[in-house]
Image 1 (cartoon, rainbow, N blue to C red):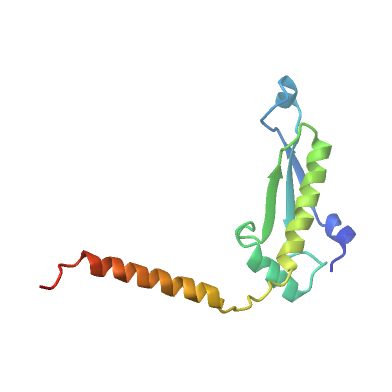
Image 2 (image 1 turned 135 degrees about the horizontal axis):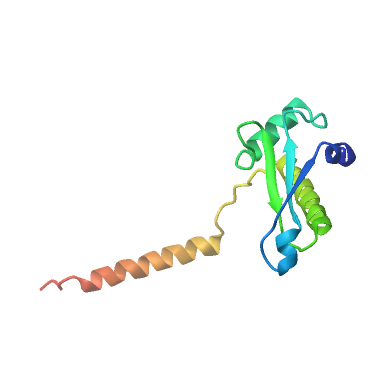
Length: 134
C-alpha cells in the first residue's frame, strides 16, 4: 500500500510538558509527543492519494497542509512516541481505504406483514375512538 519506513522518515516530533499522573516528575520532563507531518511535501504518496488523504483528513489537517496530533497517554516519552506512530499509521491506512458501496436490500415478507398488521390495528383503534353511528 505505502512504504512505512519512508513515511516514518517524513515525520517530525516535538515534545512538551504533559499533564496527568506522574507527580513532580511530570512537571520537569517533556513526555507529551506532538507528531507533525506535512502532507504536501510528502514523497511517499501519488497526487491522487494525497488528494484523497487531504479530503478524508480535512478536519485534522491545518490550512498549511500539516497534520498535527498530540499523544500524552503514558508517563514515558518513548511509549508516547510509539503510540503516536501507531495511531498515525492507522489513520493513514483508514484514510486510503476505499469505502464499500452500500447494497440496497428489500424488506422481508414477514417485515411487510408485521407493518401491515400494526397499521391495521392502529386504524381500528382510531375507529373505536369515534362516536358510534345511531
